[in-house]
Amino acid sequence: MSEYLDLIMFAALMGAILMGFPVSFSIAGVAIIFAYLGWMLGVMDVTLLGAMSQRVFGLLSNQVLIAIPLFVLMGAVLEKSQIAENLLDTMGRLFGQLKGGLGISVVLVGALLAASTGIVGATVVAMGMIALPTMLRAGYDTRVASGIVCTAGTLGQIIPPSTLLIILADVMSNAYQQAQYEQGKFSVEALSVGQFFSAALLPGLTLVVLYLLYIVIRGVLRPQDMPSAPVDLAKPQWGEVIAAIVPPILLIFAVLGAILGGVATPTEAASVGAVGALLMAGLRSGGSQRLILLGAGSFLLLAVLSGVAPVRLQRDDLGLGALSLGVAYAALTTIGGVAVLASLFASWPKRILHEAVESTATMTAMIFATILAAGMFSLVFIGLGGEERVAHILSELPGGPIGALLFCMLFIFLLGFFLDFVEISVIVLPLVTPQLILMGYDPIWLGILIAINLQTSFLTPPFGFSLFYLRGAAPKEVSTGAIYAGVVPFIGLQAVGVLLVWMIPNLATWLPSVLF
Image 1 (cartoon, helix red, strand yellow):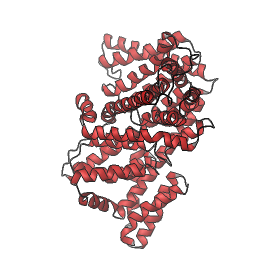
Image 2 (cartoon, rainbow, N blue to C red; image 1 turned 90 degrees about the horizontal axis):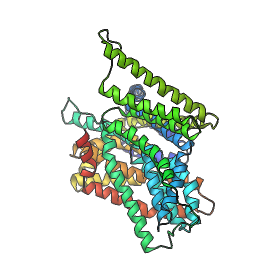
Image 3 (cartoon, helix red, strand yellow; image 1 turned 45 degrees about the vertical axis):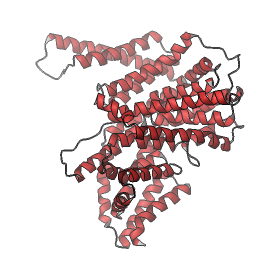
């Protein structure tokens, strides 16, 4: 039995999670139990656990992962300030008179919210509470409406900025470096979050197009499933449309433009997004429009000027021109700071920031606790010989590298029925991805292929998170069975998306090669 302890350990983890124990405690608890079990049976050196402190320090000092709470805060502020609700309402009235028009509007809003918030739960709940009742009143089939809302909400996992992509970039970069060491290269290359953001952009938009095509075709073939909205749903004025769409798009350009243009790191861009979301919340809450817009303009001008003509005020050889620029930059910063304070003051009575910070702290704690626990799990798994077993299994599979990749993709897909993307990313991927990279696969292409597969885990019963989010927000007449049945066609479309990226690697590799 001792020679199969690594496999039993993995099975025990699945059992603990299925029994309902908190995930991070399950992962860490199983790791500790099997570490001492392996030590007692003489198959593991328990002193290996001493490396855990280095892993904890490495996680806490990881500059890449600092972007996670900032992006989560940005999305939480946008959700709590009801900017998402306004966008949904406006787009629903704009496309409502088309066959499947409400479904089209939900997918487009899902894509916009994905690119501006990156939070799946908030998007699914918002659309489940606002769009789903409207679709049902318009006569939409319950399963179709539920499937569209669930799937549109998951776009936040593949369209940047995404928590999944940040974690995946860190995991794939470590795997790539490990593969290079094993190849005998000691001057190793690293991969950045920006590369994965740019790589995910075209595949994410491809999925949006697939969803829209499905809705349009189904609207033509089965119009009774997706009728037009009631005529009393007033079409919005173009001023309303612009006011609803332009702020999120500007925020998307500010965040993604800064990362993809090389102006800012993901962490810096995330802070820009959080400040932008606060300014938008202030406007939405009735703050001084002139002051907030002036502050936003000041920050924008500061970003452009400091990039074109940076000033190092700590130098002692500055001329009059540099000092004048420094004073101007300080003035712009002050104006922007006053605008942020005005936004905070305006949104304070509505408790927008209170709820956003609480939501951010909860989600960040959950993610980092899982990553910490997974570090211990993978350490014990390696100590029990699991890494060698994985490498042996992948190398012995029929079909060579293609067979190994196909096996890994199917394994990740099946794990998605039971585990969250964070657990799969930090437990399973570090074990399989170095071997796949050694087989010759491009790490960025491989990462995006896995990202789309992991996105599917939000839709797969019984534990798909989007299904639970929608179940909590949906009207009582929407049954759990209808939600499960509704996502089945979209799981098929996810598989088509994976196949397209597999067959056309340039979908994932072209943009990073151009930008980086």
